[in-house]
Each structure stands twice: as C-alpha cells, then as structure tokens.
Amino acid sequence: MSALSPLQPTSTAAAFGLAGNVNEYVWAWAGQQLPVIYETLGQGPPVLLLPAFSTVSTRAEMRGLAERLASQFQVTALDWPGFGQSPRPPLDYRPALYHQFLKQFVKAVFDIPIGVVAAGHAAGYVMHLAQQAPQALSRIVLVAPTWRGPLTTMGEHRQLYKILRNLVRTPLVGQALYKLNTTPSFLSLMYRRHVYADAAKVTPGFIQPKYHTTQQPGARFAPAAFVTGALDPVRDRSELLSWFQSVSMPLMVVVGEQSPAKSKAEMEALAELPGVEFRRLPGSLGLHEEYAAEVAEGNSTFFKT
Image 1 (cartoon, rainbow, N blue to C red):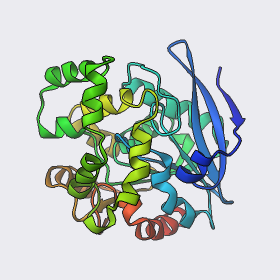
Image 2 (image 1 turned 90 degrees about the horizontal axis):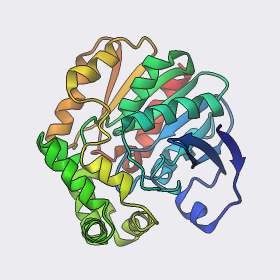
Image 3 (image 1 turned 180 degrees about the horizontal axis):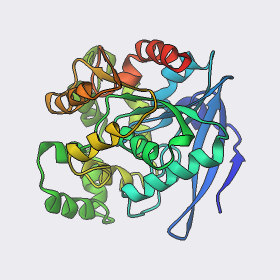
Image 4 (image 1 turned 135 degrees about the vertical axis):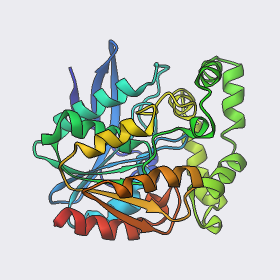
C-alpha cells in the first residue's frame, strides 16, 4: 500500500529543493517500501514537473521553472525513485518500475487532471501515461525530450552496456568506475558539452550541488541504468512516434537550438506530427534549467489556454 506523509524541512532540502512543502510518498515495488520525495508550492491548477533522468537528476533542476509558475499554479516537483533525495536501493531499475510509479503517484497525489512538464527521458514516461490513463492529464509539455540514454545514443551495443551496468553495480570496481565519472571536473565537462549552451554558467559553485547529489548512498545504481540505456522507454523512434499520434490532449514540445546533433534530430522529428505545438528556444539538453524563464513563459500561456 502507498502512503503520503509530510517531512520536516532539512538543510539539504532547502539547498537542493524548491523552498516549498516537502512530502514523502511511500510506494511499494517488488516487495519493498520505497519513499519518494516530492515538493509543492504555489496555488492554482496543478502542474507536475518531472526532472530529466541523469547522474545528477534532482527536483532542484526544476526550481527556476517552479518559482515562475507558482504565482499561477500549484506546482509539484519530485525526485524519481533512485535519484535526488529519494532513497537509492540497489534495485533492477527499468522502465516498468517508472511507468508503474508515475501512474500510481499521479493517482495518489492528484484528484483532478493535471498539466505536466517533463524534461529529457521523463517525456517518454509521460507519453506512456497518456496512453494508459489519459483522464489523469490535461496538457503536456515536453522539454528537450529524449528516448535514448548517453551510450545508446552513441551506438546500439546493448549487451556490452548491460555488462558495464552490472560492473558498475559491483561493490569495489563499480564504485571506482562511478567515482571516475562523477568528479566535479567530469561533471563540468559534460555540462559544457551537452547540457548547457552557455559554458560560462558552469561554474564551480554551480557544479558543487550537482556533485553532492552524486555522492549519496547508493547513488550509482539508477544513474548506471540510465547511462547504459536500461531506462530508455522505447527501443526505436517509431514506437515513440506511435504514442504521440494516439494522444488527443494538447501537447507542446520545446527544443533547445544548441542541442547535440543526434538528440536534436530525434526531437525535430516530433515537429512533423499533427497536433504538436513546437517551440525552439536557446539552450541544449538542460534548457529547462538554464533558460527557465523562457520555458516558463511559454508554459504559462499554454496551461492557461
């Protein structure tokens, strides 16, 4: 059985959350109770903000967007199971877990149809929810939507990636490999190459809280699944496009003009679909955080239409 409970504010929540009301949703999966942290602020029609999957994924990346929308909407942002402040047990993280979690979380927390803003890989999970429970959603905004993890974007060598994923899960070698890929210098490099369009914004002060979240107990398990493609919601573009074609609710896709070429090509393919409102903004894969004001401006108008 799932349950909801309030949490007392902590210094970590203040530093990495939204300065809103922090709560815990206790969700059951594979015989375990999994507490999931979410946060709410503002008043008005409900809007759910879903951060992108990544090694540094937290609800804090939605802070700028949440603060701008909270004057007109009741905004809720969460830390996905295995990411952020949510506990990170050594589970077999896979799409079925996140599909089921999102469906049950929305049902438990909201009693009317909601607007959703989903970044990165969260897009595929929202589109699947729109197939399974269309009555739960009113409008969808996908920001820099992706469906392939970093390694599967480079090439379809999934058996090799599975070996690597299992290696990262091991106690000693896995911890060492994970540490090499989460140093502040490496995180900074990745942000400058793929996530932020303006490299000058990627300062040591910006990277420090990102690094902090990578050092939490069990932090390597879910990110390893994402990086190696185990959390890819679909296996090919045609499957993803079929989800879009059968959704009747208002849908907007926002793409960063400086996105990596392969990812941008996949996002641009969505512009050709009927019924999709398409926007291009400055930014890359992290434009929901880097250009929160521009994203929020379009979202506010879209959700009020």
